[in-house]
Length: 63
Image 1: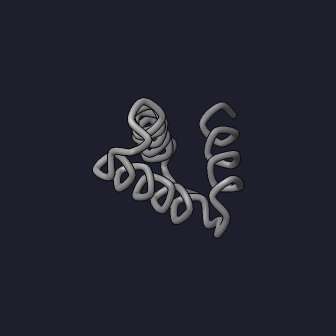
Image 2 (image 1 turned 90 degrees about the horizontal axis):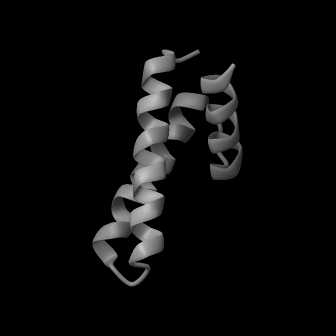
């Protein structure tokens, strides 16, 4: 399992990127950090699906 601090940092990056993308959905520079954060969470949590990776990371960080 990954370090909890790494998961929390990756979740923070994901939520920040998600807010940026939601605020500017047509901004192509907002999409890259969002996709990168999803990839990072997938690798950290060993989950191929983005929904599962985020769910597992949130549960891991809370738990």
